[in-house]
Length: 477
Image (tube, rainbow, N blue to C red; front, side, top):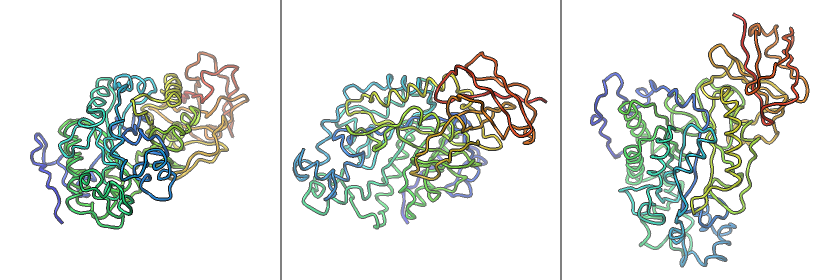
């Protein structure tokens, strides 16, 4: 199979021992970098032309051509037939006139995020950066600004880690519904934007897979991201040599930069688990995973991108699920969907701000921690798997554990009104005899007793937060 050849030998300063070859055996020596394991919390950003119609979801560009969908009906009623007004015609209204990368990053930093991951190109094929691969990009059309470039500079200047995502591979079929009736998808003048628009069961052409590989390596070279996130469709068997080529190239670039880098993948198919970092979309695990992993979830319930009818998760939901995920060796990549003018919704801003306020007090129990011997205990069952929301809310009776050195943190997923019982910290559990317990963010004395069958912590009148509280526990030598 023909595919683009990436010249690894052009990377200077790499010894033969460190050099990654484009095969899984070579890349098994890859180690997940400490910055990722320590960061725990990042921000995902779905922003593009799809924010202009602000209807349905970020899949509007596909669904507006899918006859019988609400998006198709809405589009015809509001904008006219797709032959006269197609998805491309939204680009002129994607102006981003109020977009300020520095202000965005200030909010993200205030939220307590340690890494930022904007979507460089979604399924719609409109690149949010200046690229040599297509004229359909934000630097030449719409905002006429290199959005990814501006964010890259602002994120790095703020001392945070910059990453990005590419959903380019799904573009192979994304506009295929527009082939089935008289729409502008069939206009050859726009084939370089809407194409290929094939069926999902058609094997991708070498030319398209070359294009995918070259766009991704261009992103790596231009913006030096330390995290590269892929959506599910890269798992196609035909893409196997291209996946290997990209991973080896990117990991070798990380060695050249002397920075740890991360590839996120889904579904345990695209990459061997010891070669990249597993990502769970809108879901999580119900137990500790030995290897670090990540949840990508959105504050918005219905859409990752901006819509006028989206509903939003509460700060309580986000904070307690962050704690739950971290206790199982995971990270949370939390998404926002800005408006087409570049402003962020009040609801998302409020959730980010409240999350940051909680982390500013309790971050010690989150950042830089590792899982304890068990992730937690309590009456509430954890959701498990992809697309599995935590429909049963956590309570103050649910406890999650993390550790840092010799200190164990017990975080209650609510503020207790009665005594707290923790079975895992009983004398009989043989995890150690407790010497001291402190409530993070409070100078009040904590009254407790370690019994044979439980640790009992008496309630306080006032807690530093109503969302969740963290105890710092030290054991006797």
